Amino acid sequence: PNLQGPRYVSPAPNGGFVVSEECGDVKVFTSTHKAVCSLSSKYGHRFGNPAGVCVDAEGSVVVADEQHRTVHLFPQSGAPICLVSTGLRRPAGVACSPFGHLFVADTGENCVKVFKYHVRPRQPLGTL
Image 1 (cartoon, rainbow, N blue to C red):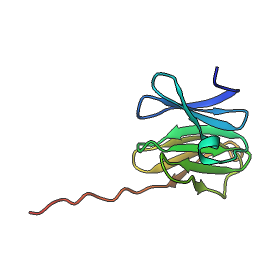
Image 2: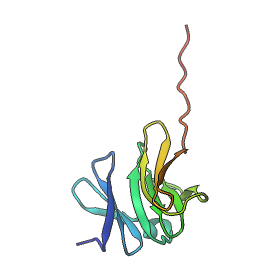
Image 3: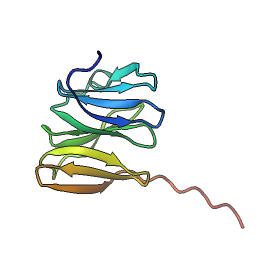
Image 4: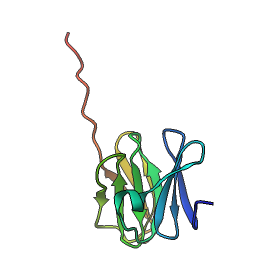
């Protein structure tokens, strides 16, 4: 009942999920299916046509926007970050790897593009 034209859905590490909507919004749900927030309301972000969504290992939501030809990351706290702003014709699907790679299905160019978007600092190995 809280959705308006659901398009893409992705599970989240905490057991919840994220859904993009045709109306131009992305909603986050808990594992008990309770709506947590709307990304456009929470971040004051205006989507054109949100398509593919995914959630990375840190709980940040990644959204492909077909109309704006961009991919944005929405961290759990802080401002949205534009990960890809050029070189996309029609980004539709997105997926994150645990190694910091972002896969973007660009239906305008009939291909999948791979980007490195996050590198975790290495943990010290300790002393010998």
